[in-house]
Image (cartoon, rainbow, N blue to C red):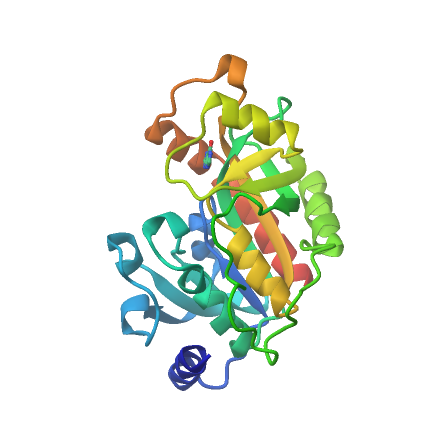
Length: 271
Ligand code: HPA
């Protein structure tokens, strides 16, 4: 708690008189969104007290304050994954700080494997619900800070129905193909076996990935409205499973960037 407060105070001094309404985790597929942001401040994670930067990737991370489609936003360019060795508290640290800075809405994106046989490579999937049960740790375990949220936070609607509806409307107005489904989170870093994909599908998941859910749990703990969008980067159908190639995953995500940015920009404008 002291670390969160210290970081919040530092950032407030860096960007005074700016209260962001919306937090965005620029995950896979949302890299290009940065071009639409009128940047007010760009702060490397390395210069922010208590921000986790143990990995090479994290060293490149930045917190970006600016205007997007008329709204004040704060964006995490670079997120933290449990498989990198961070504790769940560190994985979700940025979300806690963004809440103190003032956000009421959180938007995240990710890359995911498609378990639903109707999905195609580079499809976008609005996350309607999630399954967190396969994560080996949980960011809320330990002392509960009642000033942040309840001991037993509700998870009946982790993704806000109005945001889901608005995103669907934006997609349909722009003739964009859009899917909706359940995201199941795993720790990674290895991809799943055929038997695991089969199991996850049977349990009711449409897509599988290694991020997002800890961030959403912490955001909901603090009463933030959430929206998540996945880009399907590989098809995880056991009978036809291909060997995963990193370059193909990156290419599939890149192909979806324009439509993903369009939906998120539109959504931000309507909040
Ligand atoms: N499994 C887990 N995470 C992923 C996958 C997958 O198949 N594809 C992209 N992220």
